[in-house]
Image (tube, rainbow, N blue to C red; front, side, top):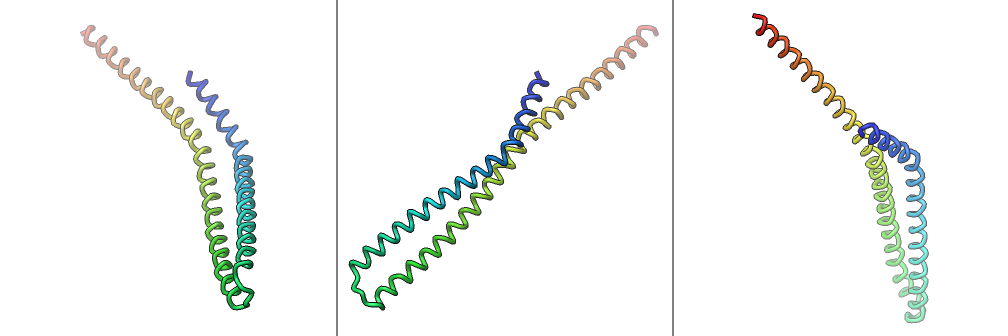
Amino acid sequence: MKVKLLNVLTVCVVLLAVLSPALLVFSMVWGKHLELVKAQNLSCEVNNNMRADSFLVPQSGGVYSSQSQPSINLSKQNLQSHNLTVVEQYQLATIMQWFFLLTPICVGLGIIAYDRYLVYRNAVFQEQVEMLERLWRQSIEQ
């Protein structure tokens, strides 16, 4: 039973080691795709807002330029916060990759160590039994 479990864990670790780079690349590509979609949606919203503002606001240069400045500042802040979330997502993906890679390895090493411990305890028990049998024989002979 333990050999089968160890074989299954070995196959899982090898499979995870083979597939983890592909999963990481897929998650990064998917994240970039979602960023692109959000950027396109934001640019459409900004363009629609600019068109609506141009119809509502008179064409004086001072008023229009003062409204465009806060929108530029807001877009810079959105990009900076968005970049932080991308970095956080990459860090989270790296942590999850290491977690999924190291968990089966640790479980497999734990099973091997426990098996070795049981073998050691059995050997100690056998030595104790043999010592008690020798003492018992010596007491019968005397």
